[in-house]
Amino acid sequence: MSNQSLTRQQRGYAKTESAFGTPATIVAVNRFLYKKLSLERKIASIKRDDITGYRTVPASMKGRQTGTWSLEANLIGSGIATTVPSIDPFLVGLFGQAAQLDGLIVYTISDSLETFSLQRYRDPSTVVQHMGVSCTVKSAEFRIGQDLSTVTMSGDAAQILDSGSFVNPSWGLTAFPSEPTLGTMSALPAIGFHGSISFGATNVASLRNMSIKWETGNDQIVDTFNSDFSTGVMGSERTITASFSLYDDDGTITNTLKSDELAYTPIVVACVVGNTTGNTWTFTLNGLILKDLAYNDQTKRWAIDYTNSEAYGTSIGTNDPITLAIA
Image (spheres, rainbow, N blue to C red):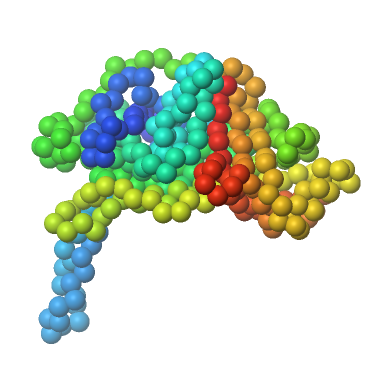
């Protein structure tokens, strides 16, 4: 009799790689919690354009192989101000470098390209397991204001391996890696409506919700001659935007924001979510130009919505449109 596989009985692991194409050795502490995790193999189809004398086209041929992955997770810190969260490999891939640890955890942008190994194990161990090699982050979104703050990310992988069709060797591996011995995980998610937001040096009490979106411009290199798989990663321009909603009033800060939007005046926005040690996340957007102001009458109180406001950084050359500090 076949064994069924239940969707709740799955676990994810991620670890930053030392170099592209070198799978990281996963251990128990590399486990992370998530709401959704997807790893999908992608095989390009080579369509034949030969004229055969019939209207039916010839069978396609197998092309290059890559993979995609996606993640949705609650923001969960380690609970210790100097210990990175379990989703650290994703954040390193997003920011381009490891966090700085000096009494708190600080992620800043680098133009370097970081990859990570991503593994998902399901019960029972006899079903097919999956592994993403040299994953890159293409997009991310942090959502703030709901009960639990969340992050969604997605990107590409050099290849998605599975235990059912593993070929020895693959990327230096001679066998599909076994799952580490399970450890305990005790950290709690950050409460999404606890925290503060400031524009300049002024705190605002009327924030309803906020979203920070990120397009990295990272891609796998998949057009190298004589290779069926990616041979590296490359990057183009990144964009970081923020959308948020505030209750409208006739106060100074609300009117100043409306003037800043009209004048295209860059501002600094700091959004703090959570209020416990090791799980307080501060997103600082520098050089944010407010855009697309809209008056919203869909609730009992008027709101003002700013959509797709882009962060450009303090100045050209500073490369600091966003920082993330966890304390």
